[in-house]
Amino acid sequence: MEQRQQGLLEKEPLQEVDEDMVSEVDLNNTITQEEKEEMHNELTKLEEEITTLKQVLASKEKRHSELKQRLGITPLSELRQNLSRGWNDMQTSTAYKKTSETLSTAGQKTSAAFSNLGTAISRRFGDMRNSPSFKSFEEKVESTVSNIKSKVGSSGSGGSFEEVLSSAAQASAQDTPTNTLTDNSEHTC
Image (cartoon, rainbow, N blue to C red; front, side):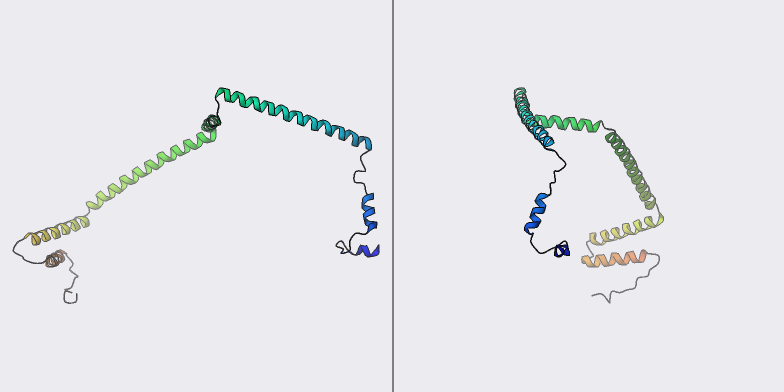
């Protein structure tokens, strides 16, 4: 026996003596023979009751199915009814009402914010258009366009389109108060 106490993980197979010791241990030693018989009887009764309940349930399910069929209730109509009931329940819930109110308020505030933003942008563009620098820029563009029109429209010029653009650019450069442009026409290709 002293060899057997080496450790929990022994490599030796069980001996015949060990098997006899295991069979002598009765795990149910706390239950008497009478209690075992009572338990077996109760178990038998429960199994019979379960069988009877299963038969009753099957009979009721069959009757349920027959009644639904006679009433014309289909699985699809049941699904529709359940979805409708669920949707109605959800709409009447407090959480749905609060969420709906919150989203409505947020939508109104967002709409007002976009409206105010649009008004502010319009006002800014109006202010910008009335500014002296924009008016000066607008006048320069108008003068350049009229110069181009007059050059292209005149029949006696005989110049090419590039010449007209070049002369319009020179005219525009002469109209600017601070002429920082130098004549780079010799350096361009």
